[in-house]
Amino acid sequence: MPSVRNKFRPGDFSLRVAKSATGRGLYTDTAIPKGACIIEYKGRPCTEKEQYENKGKYLFWTSDTTMIDGNIPGNIAKFINHACKPNCEIDIHKRRIYIFAKRAIRAGEELNFDYDTEYFEMHIRPIGCKCASCVKKKYTYTVASTATAFLLRLCKAIMKRLSLHPSGSFALDLLVFE
Image 1 (cartoon, rainbow, N blue to C red):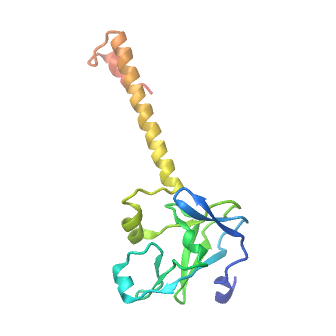
Image 2 (image 1 turned 120 degrees about the horizontal axis):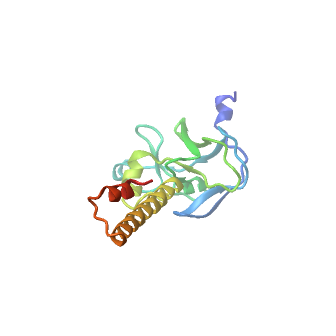
């Protein structure tokens, strides 16, 4: 078990900023083991006015009363995008933010964490979540809806061709056939 001091020491992982589905994202070029400290999310302290306005996209609460703005040069952790099923998680230690691997992460994967309710409601929900699990869910729903609509049209065409009325028992058998 690593000491607390070593737990919050980011590993020597090769990370890069690259194009992602939502703009730019942070990717790893090396495999990262589950539980590893990947990177520190750095920023400058926010003023009380900035905390009250809470308008920036890189703001992060470090305690109940302190916030940082991660939109500073050199903070590549700001490119870690949101995911509803993330591969990373956040741990705050002594008002510093660290990103840890929630599971083993393969080389080439984009790093992501759950931005949580407040940020999600303010910035993501209005435009729709574009994380991989939500995009897959939307695609699956669209394909399923399209297939269901096609099958219903097909059943109606068959019923019409056979001169069957929807009230006949054969027609009901056709509609519930799986």
